[in-house]
Image (tube, rainbow, N blue to C red):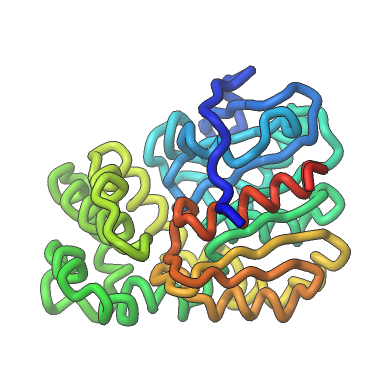
Length: 317
């Protein structure tokens, strides 16, 4: 059985900015067929923004897909803003976008941080979710953050970890998330950018099973790194404004929602234990643990399962 891959390149059929209050303006696009099955794509990070390739995860004949840049990143404004930027602001933004789209329910697709936001949204508004497609499960637990930003993944990437640590003096390395927070919120642009690039390139260099230089270098662009690192760190410092373990604890609220969980066996950013815990707490969902795969949606085995999921929920298979 051959692996499925992205659909051909496609341009949006509509786009714009939505004023969501608090001084934020959210950039959105719709691609596919107007009036077809509604879906919303949730990008990672937080702070990552979406890319044109994300439109290609859905059969354009079957779907009308809304993609949006979450507060502070991508083409949304103001850039890299931390003001009024929390998980629950984003959940409210999704409801505004759904209402703008004029649909009662939509399929929610999210990977990495996008899976966190998808779970938060679905547990708050289960009646608005027709299906969930989740990849690289992350639930904002302290242990997950510590694994990636304190000690865990560092043991597998000592060379890249050394670059990550470079902006932080030895004396401050006992709490790296807080040490980076100080620099990412600095008024000194050089200090802020040095920290942002170290933070962002650590992720870019560790999310694929095998090296992907082009992907890693994209994480080092100044504007991307600034928003990505600042917003991601901001969310982690505050634990996503959720109680510890909340998303797994409340997974019972997802009962009756069809779902697919896709997880790479060798995911260093979001290890499989969290996806397994979600699978146990939400047995309605199909669970696929992909051998020979890391974290990125572009890993061939992961991408194959994601495309098969959107095809099936779109009525194709």
